[in-house]
Length: 168
Image 1: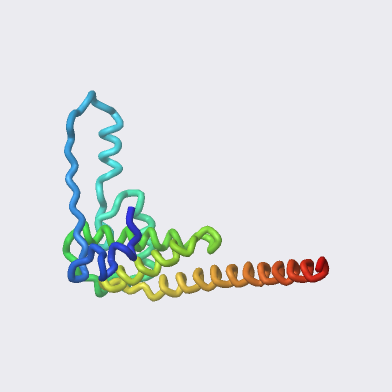
Image 2: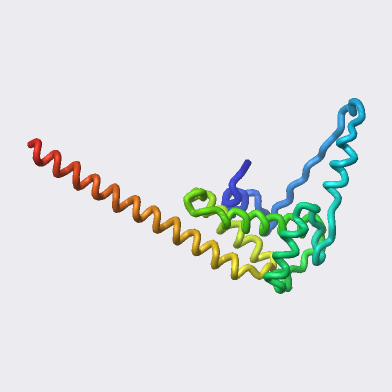
């Protein structure tokens, strides 16, 4: 696991000319037995085309809703590679799902990675002003919570100092 900020860091990251390529090779050493689950699983993993994006059956409704609510979301997105198109769309779906959580459930690292992801996907050509607005709202709510915690901590410090003064 590697934070997106470290992956894209221009000074020591893995980005070359603004691109990161990840290659993986999977080898099957041995197939043991036959499973009825295998056929059912392969049906679940078949992709379905939704607005030019290959998505899993479980994602169809979310992606359709995304394009219904934001018809111009991919108007400037020009990548042809199916795998990259899918990866970018999955990033948007994951980001949307994350931002539906309450601000308390998101850590500062979550918010930083959300900003990095949003920047990356926007640079790829997606129009996500609505998502940027949502991220700002979540970040502001989180900031307000932190400020309230700080006020409480400052009051506790004042109380402790008063206690110390009374003891002296």
